[in-house]
Length: 93
Image 1 (cartoon, rainbow, N blue to C red):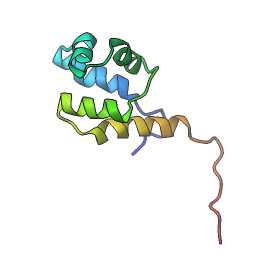
Image 2: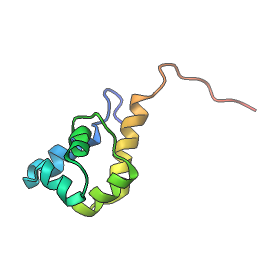
Image 3: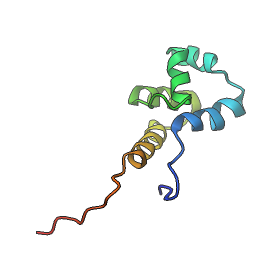
């Protein structure tokens, strides 16, 4: 369920606060393990970039989660961020 009074937490914050910090893993260590750049990890954590399907698969393998977990975090965030201000009535046929 999406929060109604705020944006869902960006997946980069979840990555940092629920995975990296508790496990004492640096961004550099994760980037090396995933074979991607530190810049990519840092931009996700700083909410400047998104979790892509490729990154979702890599994170799932690294943290024993599923790629769906990471993609759902990103999708929920994107949907809330792009919700129209006005709601329209459904088309009735």
